[in-house]
Image (cartoon, rainbow, N blue to C red; front, top):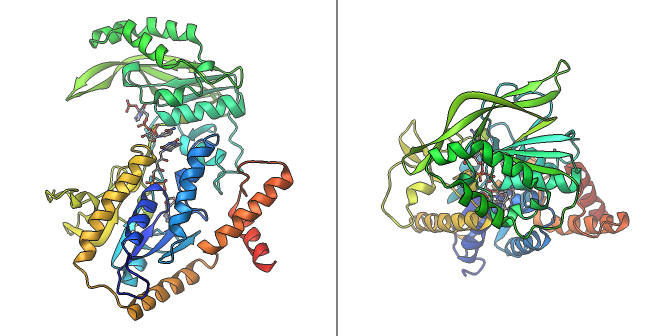
Length: 455
Ligand SMILES: Cc1cc2nc3c(=O)[nH]c(=O)nc-3n(C[C@H](O)[C@H](O)[C@H](O)COP(=O)(O)OP(=O)(O)OC[C@H]3O[C@@H](n4cnc5c(N)ncnc54)[C@H](O)[C@@H]3O)c2cc1C
Ligand SMILES: NC(=O)c1ccc[n+]([C@@H]2O[C@H](COP(=O)([O-])OP(=O)(O)OC[C@H]3O[C@@H](n4cnc5c(N)ncnc54)[C@H](OP(=O)(O)O)[C@@H]3O)[C@@H](O)[C@H]2O)c1
């Protein structure tokens, strides 16, 4: 590691989730100065505000590791700072600081909608809002999220399993129906995650569902019996049931309309039956113009997310553009360089990592690996630049701090996060909450920090 005071490069990382933190880790280890700007006061991204609340070990381990990285002398952290065209600081402002590289690791903060009639009705939610709610992300933690008795979840991935888990464990609703446009063989949730909820599965309903879809599975060349036994086998053993909620699956069904009553309350979803047809290596859902309804009081779309297109980088179809021309390098640096399709050039010195590069793709380990690969690409770029001497570095950091202070006077540096943690622990003890008490709003977090500062 380059010692403090020696010439080094300055890198600004936006986003302190698993991808951003991997970049911070690698580049700070190499002796570069790294300044992290993060929308949330706390670091961790979905490791703090996404992973299911009962996964204490996974979450705790990740956050401890990130804390150790941020504790390094050559790392600065500014929480509560949102980057974006309509936010505290624009990408252009950061570029004007003159850092050697800017890494965008902001995750997939945009909302993916699939264009279903009625999807603006009260009681239609996007999974991320609910995930943020139960993980107490400020802005979402105090919203009521009325779910009613019966909930339809659109999507068959791990987020569906997490939402079902929350509905079963905490909301204890009567019925959860997970809806997939394709078949059981195309389910995307993992066996480990479904075991958290499979004790609630209505197995008779599953058998009836199989009878309903069997002809279409067989027409697509799939062995329906084998599929049923595979799916049933992976749901053994299940974690003990935490409520009486009935969990059902509907396959080969694509949402067509959210049905509401005269008070605009949701009364169900109209689904269109689909069949499977090959497209390249994959099977796609083809609509059959035959419809049926399922009754429900709320609908949750768990169909993945897209990037936040207001961040200020060129994007298309929910992803930020990267350079389209492969370089043949390993890793291919074009895939990590932000790209401007109007100029046909990479945006000099701006890089992408994690879900900001590939929205909603993979687990924490995949996001970390993406951050690792991005770090390599950034290092190639840094090698082409003359390192900053101590004076130049201090001047750029001074300008960055002034910009942050001016635009977000309530930015939270890493030193203050320790106070916040202590105050949350104290408050948790006071309320008898042993594990994981969180202040639900930024205002309360900032007040706690101020209180600690004064005492
Ligand atoms: C519901 C859910 C549950 C999951 N559970 C698991 C699990 O149990 N195990 C597992 O391995 N993986 C899990 N994953 C996947 C894992 O969370 C992701 O792979 C990973 O978090 C992606 O990392 P990231 O750094 O790209 O983005 P994120 O984790 O989303 O981090 C983005 C960071 O950027 C910051 N940010 C966003 N916008 C801005 C902005 N405009 N300005 C400044 N900062 C900004 C945010 O504050 C955040 O800190 C889960 C995902 C979801 C959605
Ligand atoms: N506990 C965990 O480990 C955990 C928890 C949560 C999330 N994650 C990870 O986070 C990532 C994102 O998870 P995710 O569940 O959001 O995404 P996902 O795994 O991609 O699943 C999305 C689901 O939505 C469906 N879908 C997408 N577009 C649709 C449309 N237009 N109409 C109907 N259905 C549509 C998909 O069906 P098709 O297959 O037909 O496209 C799929 O069933 C995954 O890598 C996941 O493993 C992990």
